[in-house]
Length: 427
Image (cartoon, rainbow, N blue to C red):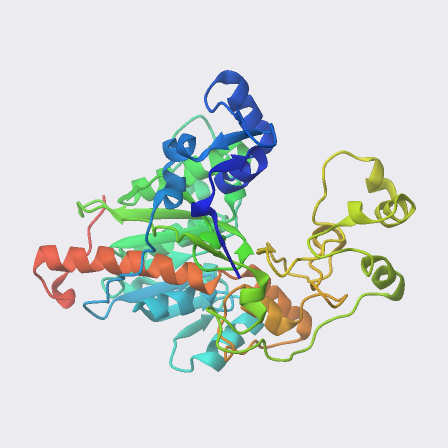
């Protein structure tokens, strides 16, 4: 089943907050200040926004798109990628589906590296701490460097942050790999929280470092996976740097109108040609199952009788905040909430719509849009960890198509073969 938000005329404050990645409180402040003033919906008299009011937001362009974006450029050459912090391969598979080739992948976690080797024996998987790896042999051989580096704060000393100041952080290693290989373009991905991490100083430091080593950085973009054929409310921050000798724009992928749901992930339909394969998964303890049995589809702990709310939530019952992920049963006709590395954590419950149990391994993988034939190595907990940490494959594919379009334009404009392209030399 598909949601089609394009057909809607009015949007609630919470809906717009979710689409923009803001809190409802932020939108209420905008309402009071006149930045975005809500109106009364004629039938219900609730405060809402007219669809036309949302044209001021570039990220909501898809609301006004009458046709789906379906034409994608095919790779005009053998474009190569060096992927860092590769994990279980979500980003790599998506880029591969878009026509890019992984020249090498670096991953520290043994079981994630084993997953990569098992599924793609021809990939050059470098299983090692990135701090121990030199990437100089790839200089001039890769078009793109990608990496989902962990978010770490930097220390400032009242001056512009440079590469040497970031030593000891994993972003330093990402930047070092870029500096050693000099790709045409680099792409970092992370959680949306990076944008405001340490009051924005962390992302500011990352931009200044990439600038120092010869890359102009586009304004970071938050991509919502639900707009890219992923049945999950997951968000990723994308940081793109283009080598300074290249005078071309990079176009972020345009969102689709259709939003897929859990039903699309686990049952036969547009996303998958068959139902989800059987697989292993954990069970809830007896008392927890008895309580979650009472939660309806799309419901959470507030749908329980008051006595059970207090029993289940304990001290958290008296604290503020909605805590809508607790005792949460996902409905068939909604996208799943963001998956975590464990399918049964109390704070981020993801219960099956009909059976009172956590999602199983292959269900987890489908919600992340992994192919059914992609095997995960290691114990059950290791498999959940790999899947929960991954970039959704379909989102990665859309990023890949944007990279292909950029590279096609570069090599087309320069009228040179890939082998003749020389890397930019920074100071």
